[in-house]
Length: 556
Image (cartoon, rainbow, N blue to C red):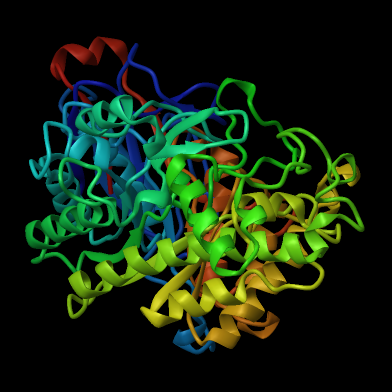
């Protein structure tokens, strides 16, 4: 039988029998068949075409049957569930899909709930495990300190549960806007911005004095600078309120809490900000240690080490955002990074980042322990200049990873202290796709991270860094996900749910990918796939619009 969702706006339409996009000009009826991920065939047909029937066909009666004189639509009905074949269930890698950044509106309500409901139905038929959503600090605690509005997220959790999906909730303590993929603007809470306007040193600052409002500087983690509370206390109170509001869903529907640790939710400094054209790929970025709190910390540590002169400032020869390593005295082949001073500075700079992560995750561990929900922390995939000795772009971000130092093992060990999953990006990238002058090696970086995670004894989860839908990107993720390639993935989250995902070819690629991940990544995707999945889209005659004022999306 058909499940009908009535919507005042149509979610998908058929542009040219090959492409699905949003449109409000006419009504559509959408039919998704339940299917096994192993039967990954996508086909888009005009419903008035005749179709040869197989023994697996069902008859679905259109809700417009009266107006169409009893016309019936037939399509293949495929059984649901993951097909694992002879593989051990432990080799299965569940796939999640990131929801839009503005899933909850500035007003605190669920954005376009009818369209989202239809999208979740479609994802369920594709065999997707669940979805990920940013739980924005700037939306929830917007009105004032300790005044939380969770209602938009409550609606989302209930919708996810209704469709039998799981949810990864990201405690997003950063602003949205100004970085790769940011399609909307969600600043920090207004009352926090008021404090920043009074004391600009609350945010990260570069050598030239440029302030970055993406995230509160870790230099003031332990200081009561937010109306009597420290930033760590503010983050803990937020997570505690979330735990109390959603305690009946944790471990069942909400299976993972990704704890925001910095810009873009990642454990790093905002060393490569794209806003206003400050940084461009593949620039080395800049150190972010020039607010008064970070400078005071550096000065104190230098004094303790008997090198007071080292605490006056950060490196004077580290260059500017868009320079290359060899353009600077600090990052060049035989540069300052490999001197006593360089090692001192980097140990302090990276150590402060580790302390920051340890503090927040320690709070999160105490709050969510025993709820059944996993904790995860995200680390950025900074792959440019990876082939150079100094790994300049990683150093400015706070990862002390050079030819002589492993920057990811200390991070993995810190996460292991709190039983936190190591979430890493750039899983879809290949070395050969990158510009040679940037000295990139995303594959080498992923291999290093996998070894660090294995040595620390924790789980590894992955994401794609950029929005891609091609078989080559999916194939790279599949290769990375396998446990026989060092350390397998416990989950993969795909970026991102939008109208492009529902274009026929992109949907086919996703379905194939989910099926392959369900088999432990051992079934590689073809470069091109002429087979089809049974997705039918039927135009509803404009005249029949009078029968139903609302547009309808029918998912079977």
